[in-house]
Length: 368
Image 1 (cartoon, rainbow, N blue to C red):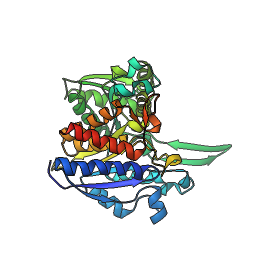
Image 2 (image 1 turned 120 degrees about the vertical axis):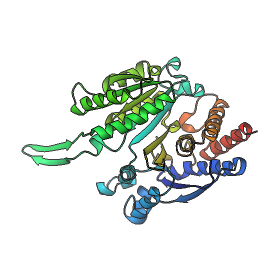
Image 3 (image 1 turned 60 degrees about the vertical axis):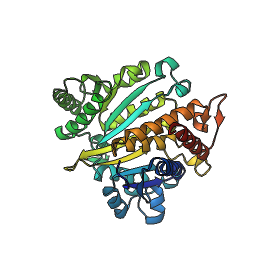
Image 4 (image 1 turned 45 degrees about the vertical axis):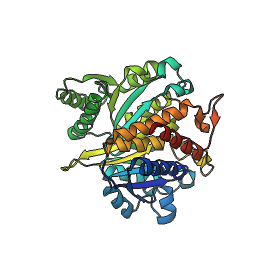
């Protein structure tokens, strides 16, 4: 991997700065032990940006994000900013980053390591070794469709959210999903509600047509409500799932809890490739800002560290070091090291910074 790739750190709010601090330990380790280095910049987003700049994302920060090789985000939001204007709320900055960077393909893995299987709310045999990848369309659908409004009507109010998709929007996210399925186990579930929604009808039609370009991939269509049921009934039937923004939001959180903890799960959101083959990308943990434990060194940094491993894999083609980091996470958990959110009987409770230290120790062992 070429040296000095440009990264932008956006720690955000709550536990964001703490978990990002542990990623810096991994970056320092890569620099010292693997001669992999980065040009690293850091800026504000979310509530931290509101407090300083009066908005959750400044134009200057967005410009930085548009011109780096990858963005790593911690978390945004918290009750402190619950009553700010909707257009500047912490989450608005995140949505703007996704929209303006054209990050249309959100990759949400749900992996259950054997050491964590008993932490799941499902039976251990259903989830141990689980490895699902959900590809969620993330710049269209009900979250961005217009009109979107609440209006007064006789006797009350009327709320409108518009679910809208174009052929092109569906095609590009389906191609990403088919491509990823080809690098995994060759099975793709396309999920929608074609029985009651016109967008679902179009989604199914487009997914079927794209599937003809990938004859080696086994394509199965499934309604979103059935998919939710199947995720908790027999989750190992799935390999890759591709779905729209709204259903992807719901199903990926459902899949996340199969693994035992949101604190363990990374994500990536990618744009299409430009003429040079470069993709814009943002990586972030699935968990929120956890303001109740912010500043107490109790957070689980593993999801953010695993998000960084996804960055190495998808943005920089550095599968070797991504594998190394993922292996170190697996070994650390196998040793019984736990932060509070994944604590189990007989395990060793550690702080956020201690978990980062334990991980670098495992990296040292694996790199010998």
